Picture (cartoon, rainbow, N blue to C red):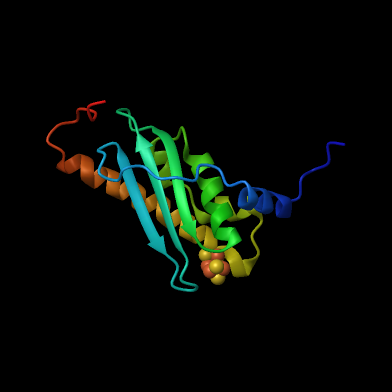
Length: 140
Ligand code: FES
Ligand code: FES
């Protein structure tokens, strides 16, 4: 039966089968790293993006030390921003994430963590590229 999946199931699914867990070498020039913490609870999230020369996110990975909602938020966020340009990804807000996962109010800061992590990964990537001697992609 094609019943509508409840949001609750969606959180659990992302929690039990998180997508894109992993990390990239943060020294790579095509990688941006965001590392953020939630003062409210002490949870920490690392989210990394790999960006091609057209400014499109090819891949996103994360590692989250935190609650289920934070893990689900980062898992969902990595799926969401893959294929986006940096500008598009910069528009992603915690609202998008918390609505998709239907987080309860007390868990809203968990999705905020994902928004902050995306923002900070983009910032890191841009500052690295602006300091890079050339726009050549790193040697394979
Ligand atoms: Fe941080 Fe949930 S309060 S683990
Ligand atoms: Fe703190 Fe989820 S990130 S309770």
